[in-house]
Image (cartoon, rainbow, N blue to C red):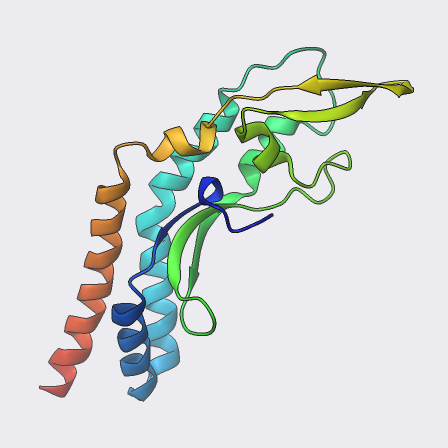
Length: 169
């Protein structure tokens, strides 16, 4: 799955987060501070992930129940992700690929887009159909709340920076 816009809500204040991560590394208990910062950032984004999960669960089921269930499998793969350091630093909510879901690893991406996806008809591999999910279910989960989540992530970063500054001073 590409790191395109519909599948991550990211707060990427690279300079601030990079400086904070470097300051944490200089501390004696830097590993513990990094873990705590990552945990705090994930906790801040958990409500956003829950909103996205409810968005996919609201998609209509157009037929008989099948196993494994598409909507619940996608919902299980939506979670906050935090990376500190490396190529990319930031906090985001991401819909990860669904690897073992009926040979449909890109289910989160395909159910979100207007074009839907094509697949063969059950029992007849020669006939293909176009199927549509709930358009923009992931994007609508965050509509109007981006500023709130950004402010919450920045507040968590600021709290950690203040803790480190209080130690030094």
